[in-house]
Image 1 (cartoon, rainbow, N blue to C red):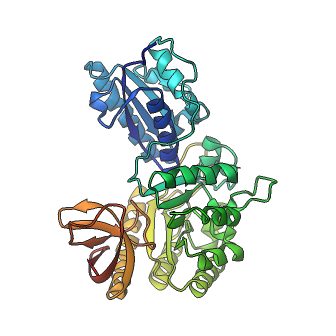
Image 2 (cartoon, rainbow, N blue to C red; image 1 turned 30 degrees about the vertical axis):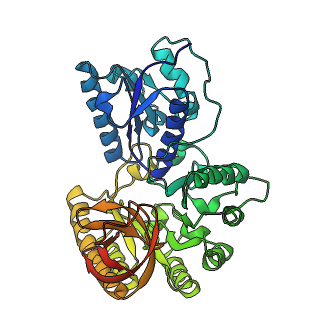
Image 3 (tube, rainbow, N blue to C red; image 1 turned 90 degrees about the vertical axis):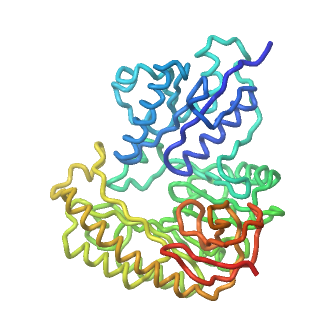
Length: 435
């Protein structure tokens, strides 16, 4: 029987964990003989992988669905499939409000995507045509995200992830190592570990695995050069993990530690198990144990009840501790979360004003930090090119979220490593020259 002759296009939204889900679906679709296209306008089927973390993400997802609906109305697209987090929100009117969508697929059914496509066209192919395990990377092949767990047990008062993704569930260490080996065999040299909280990896299993044992097993893979950790909750950063980051040459001296705030009262209302003193002690310990470590974090601005004094304290913290990378997000009032019911909601105008103020402070911190890097010699990898030359980064920079190192040399090769001396900076980005 001939394969179904259809082109499948994708729109991927949201986090890196969502991206991994999509890459696995893409692999199954390609293995079934369907054609993958990067242009949704030239696809027979458009799959929209949605995010529903906050209101703005849902608006973006719905906008993408409506764009696909217009393509379908104009006869450019035959079928629309919606996957991802928006389907987990249990909106009773989702199907009736979007009749253009042919299938809403829950996350647990992602592995059935080929059968779902077949059913939409009444195609009598094999029910499960792809039993192989793999991914079709949407990143450059030299780096890939490895989703080591799904779900969350933290139940922060502002967050719906435990209700969308369920309780924390670690993947088996053997599966993760095997997946990493497959990626490395195809040219990946950097593995980026992601989960809602990578530090809790293995805590739900009874086989003795942990984030440290996983790192050690991954480190044995030949040709794997960098292992990067994202989303490490500050209260779960153990001395053993810190020592592993310090002593293991394959682990990037980089940590993404979402703090969300530093005021004790705000943290308590967020249901975060931390405090100002604990955060300061952690930063001090990390910088003492790993002097060259780069620390990234995120802060929520305008959480319900945040006073001017509490915000000013956060501003002072940003100025004093000069973290390498900081992302700021205004609080989003999520229906169904506990924080949505809190009194003293901060006005949107105040949130935006505070966001502008603290962003300006962090910009100056970034300039000061960049100035200190002039003269450094770094091992960098090439991620791509722009009009002025190569876009590079070192172990101290995460792809797609941090600043970059610009090198005016078009002879460099994507995915290759070079020694670069930092000579200048331009806003957030560093400028270097190849040695």
